[in-house]
Each structure stands twice: as structure tokens, then as C-alpha cells.
Picture 1 (tube, helix red, strand yellow):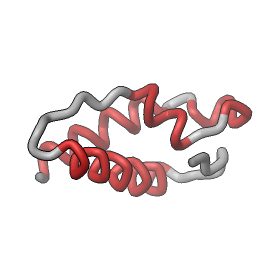
Picture 2 (picture 1 turned 90 degrees about the vertical axis):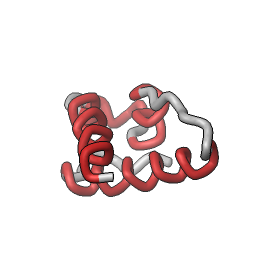
Picture 3 (picture 1 turned 30 degrees about the vertical axis):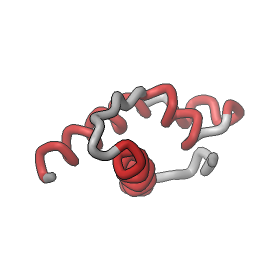
Picture 4 (picture 1 turned 135 degrees about the horizontal axis):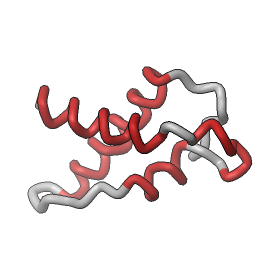
Length: 70
């Protein structure tokens, strides 16, 4: 699943939240390790180039927010 380079931070957050919760649901009750690279490939195509520049920060912030707010 790739979305292109015109996504806002909120759109990235929404997409990542859905992907992460889906994976957590599949692995429940066993904890899972979420790796940035796995999700980067699901959100951006290789040709999106610079669009993925701040993805690691968005990913980390999304995971922290989900953890903090349950």
C-alpha cells in the first residue's frame, strides 16, 4: 500500500495507526516489535523519494502517542 508523496502528517498518523492496530490485533496477546522500515514500505513507494524524509519521526511520534493515550 503506497499513498504518494502528498500526505499530511495527520494522514500519515491515521494510516500508521490503522496499520499498527491491525498488526497488534493479529498478534494479540503476544507483543510485537514494530519496525520503521516495515511501515515505510507500506506507506511510501520507492519513487516517492523525499516524501519519506521525516517518516521515522512521524512513526516514532505515532507509536509514542498511541502508547501514551492507550
